[in-house]
Image (cartoon, rainbow, N blue to C red; front, side, top):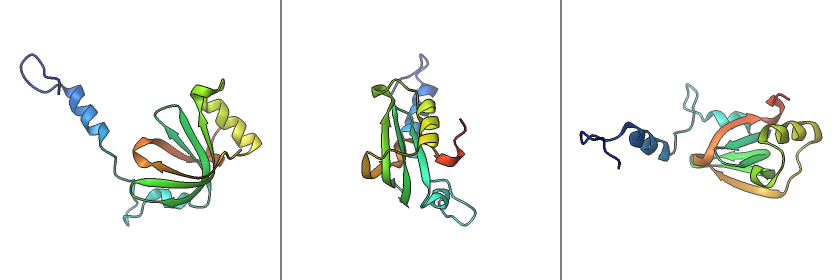
Length: 119
């Protein structure tokens, strides 16, 4: 771990170490995972990397999210940005290229319903 000239641990290294650990699920006052409210709806799972998952939320687990009829979009393999692709998908519909996908929660940056995407 990087140290400062005085021998202390660099604050950036501490923050990075925190970010490496999976964040606990967001829960309501009753301890229920907030993502369960989206079950059965078309959701967008955005990652910190180039991947975007658009599909129907089937199940929510502590370590993963299960989607059905999923469009896995890699913005590195496309001319369109994630935002443009989402706007097009909202207008044209989901073009599933996977029947079922399990997405680890630790790679998810944000979750929203497709109908909540603003063009």
